Image (tube, rainbow, N blue to C red; front, top):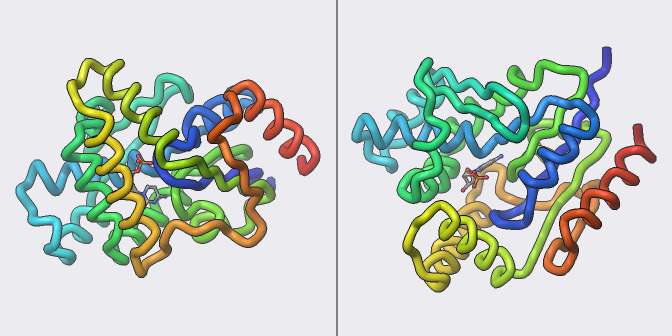
Length: 222
Ligand code: DC
């Protein structure tokens, strides 16, 4: 049976996971948040006090770590070597560490392999930075979301506040711009739009309109 993959790429705060979860629900597809895998590896490196610039040691963690995603798209649980880390991987030091370790080519290779193995269903929605270019270059539907940095920072800031974290908008924006630069400038499979991906600017689109538009695109290719 052929696998139908919807690849969603783009920087932080563009709405990838909100869109991905809505599509997965609509089509009864498996939803895979690829960033969660980088985050789980970063968490293990931090827990083991492995310096993030010790590339071989971090790559060894990436190869060895067992990362599992379980549950519905809206209540996805993340397990690292059998321990639930759903909340722990969202800590701000893990967010930063994930973007650092994601620049290591051997880490990326190990994660790409894990992601392909996880996509064990006839229909898959996967979001990330390199899904349409590297993980599933033959995906029939590739979306690349963009939005103005101010809009993305505002969304992230609201999310942080809703989680009860005291952080300024300026700080959220500065960290987001720093992570974006690392994602776009790294040598190994950087964040770029695949030539055949559809570019969608979500700066002014509300979510319902975005989902309706993407459903039309997917149905036209199904
Ligand atoms: O999507 P996210 O913010 O949870 O991802 C965490 C980090 O992982 C992000 O800084 C970039 C990296 N990442 C990546 O390099 N490639 C992916 N496919 C997904 C995430």
